[in-house]
Each structure stands twice: as structure tokens, then as C-alpha cells.
Amino acid sequence: MSQIKKEDIKQEVFDLYDDYAHNRLDRRGFVEKLSLYAVGGLTVPTLMSFLMPDYKGNVQIRADDPRLKSAYIKYPSPKGGGTIKALLSEPKDAKKKLGGIIVVHENRGLNPYIEDVARRAALAGFITLAPDALTPLGGYPGNDEEGRAMQSKRNPKEMEEDFIAAYDYLKNHPDCNGKVGVVGFCYGGGIANMMAVRIPDLAAAVPFYGSQPAVEDVPKIKAPLLLHYASLDTRITGGWPAYEAALKANGKKYQAFIYENVNHGFHNDTTPRYDKAAAELAWKRTIDFFNEYLK
Image (tube, rainbow, N blue to C red; front, side, top):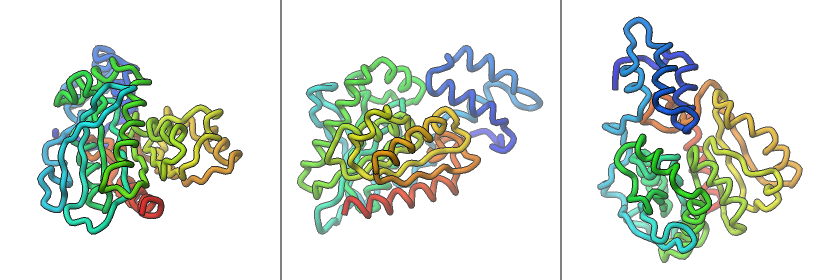
């Protein structure tokens, strides 16, 4: 990664990247607008390189960590994409059945960051399943930019079915105790909310900066919720007051945290939007929450 310091970058640059990363701005428009901030020693290529994910050296739990059993499997999703590839991880020396966690990726497929998160959750004492919604199109292509383009071509409703099927697979896995929760990031945060609406037996849901469900669907939620938001992420956090009002009105069990002065994606430690203090606190709260409801 370049030697640019995060504090030297204007918030508008992060907002532009958010628009680009969520397909509200094409690459040409992104480059054109980014050029307005290429001043001094900063060039557009340098800024772009700084903003993009950097997976080298940022993995916390290696794929071959000796404490884990971690391997790719395939599970059926008859209503979705047929057969879906996923990373299944669990502690190697578990003495009992474990609570299950579905780990849902962002809008770019099962990239190294999400695989790492799935292994972190497994190391905390759970059996985790991280599906790749890009499986029907050949799977995560090795970089996020192509992955984002691929995911935009999939039918959103079919992808929802893929994650519903992941829940069914994990709940019935012989190493799972039958209590299954979900954690999702960005697009995956929206999927976590969707699963809370659609799965009556879901044991817990933790959306990280996820889009909210329709207010009329809130009465269907049975699972306790732990919701993480970023104060600078006005695109997503702006929908929280109406969601909270509906949760309160329907007597739902939830906890919500808005982390100050951090951006959408603050948990992703491969991008400059990462905020170490907020990410670590949110993750501790997440594991504590799952320990309460999945054990």
C-alpha cells in the first residue's frame, strides 16, 4: 500500500469510493471525480491504489491455522443457484457440538477478508459457513472489482435463497448444536436483516452497516439483533431511526451501536476505511452476543 496517511484524505474521497464500491458511480466517473482531489504529491493512480483492498499481509488467521479444521464444501440451494461453494470452519479439538454462524460477504463474493472473518469466528468456538454467492458464475474471481461486477449480474432473490439454504445446511450439520446465527457485512448486513425476517428459528443476527428491511416486515423478526453502524455512513445509518422505531413498536430484542467518526466498512482491515478501535470493539461485542445466544 502507498505511504498516504488516512488522516490526509478528505472525507469526500471516502464517500466517492463508497459510491463506486456500491455501483452508484462507474469507474470513469469515479476517476473523473477523484481527480479533483489529486493535488500536491497525490495522483489519481496513487489515490486509487490507496483506496482499494490490500489482502497481502492482512490475514489474521491463516487458512492452514493448525487450531482449525477449515475447508471448502458445497451445499445444495435448489431455489437459488443449484450448488454453492462455501468455506466451512470449526475448532479442531471441539469436545461438543457447536453453535453455528453464517458469515455473509459484501457485494463482491467470498474474498480473503470474509474468509478470514469466518476463521476468526470459528476460532472463537463456533462452526462457521461462509458461502460464495458468485458460485453459479464461477466463484470469486480473485479481485474485488471483477467480483462486484459479477455479483451485480446475479438475481438478488436467488442469492437470498442461497443464504437461506446455507442456514438449513449448517443447522443440520452433525457438528452443529442446531443454534445458528448470522453475521454479515455491507451487502451481507442486509442479508443478515433479511434472514432475521425470513427465518423464524434464526438464533441471532448481527448486521454490520446493513440495509434495513421494510418496516412492515419487522413484526416477522424473532431473532435477537445486534446492529453495528458507522456515523459517517449516512447512506445506511440514515435508515436506522425508522428501523429502530419499528423494532421498539413491535417489542423486538435488539442492541444497536453507532461508532463515531468511522466509515462504512470500518471492520474491513484490508482497506483504509478500517478503524482498529471500532472494529475490535464491534467484534468483541459480536462474539459476546453469539456466546449468549448460540451456546
